[in-house]
Amino acid sequence: MASNAASTLAAWTEAALTFFYPDVCQHCREARATREEGYVCKDCWRNVRFIVAPMCDRCGLPFEGEIGDVFDCANCQEMDLQFTRARSAVAAKAMVLEIIHRWKYQRALWFEPFLSGLLLREAVPALREKKWDLIVPVPLHPLKENEREFNQAEHLAIHLSRAANIPLNTRLVRRVSPTRTQTQLSRNERSANVKGAFAPGTNIEQCRGKRVILIDDVMTTGATTSACAKVLRAAGAADVCVWTVARGLLH
Ligand SMILES: [Zn+2]
Ligand SMILES: [Zn+2]
Image 1 (cartoon, protein in one colour):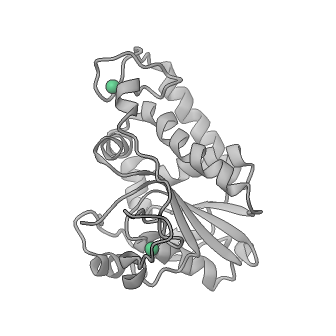
Image 2 (cartoon, rainbow, N blue to C red):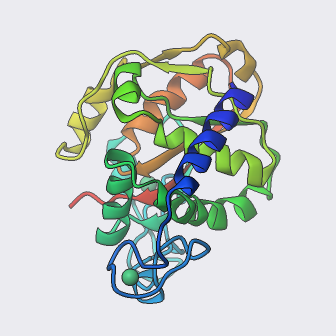
């Protein structure tokens, strides 16, 4: 639960800091970058694209054009999204995607402050506009969590929970099937792939009447977060919104 997850995170951070990382950008490995800069140098920081208006009000998909233009979001038309709204901090372009990949699959722990920093920078001020009751990370299947040794969404959720002062709850939803990665799938395939992937967790009744923020690292169509939101709404959550670090774009 919250305190458990927090102590796990503290252990991780401590483990990470017992190694010595030189002040070198861990992306280009050329320029200087300190721990405070997230080990990403000023030049590499220029690759970060924060998502700004205009965007789809529902799913947060950025679009080209003037504000005020009529915009039919192709993603929302095809997906039956179960959350009220989704927002992401940055576009999932090459550098950010590579950093997320290294963090998740190669235990590049030193990137965690950089990635959580992107999320916090955008999400914390936005979340202040309304009252939120709970922060819930999208769960990993236990097999995958054992393999990876951590749930990246849970780590992000812990950082956001602390910064925004909104309680964390990791026992509301369970992942009951180890779905294959969505990377190569179309919209329809993504929805089918995560159908039935989530089930109520041991504390599911705690979401009744609550306004919930669901957290993941990357959202593309919203299929995964939507499947997770469906479980929360079925259990009586008053509202479910989504925040992710990055937004992937289907081509
Ligand atoms: Zn660099
Ligand atoms: Zn949309």
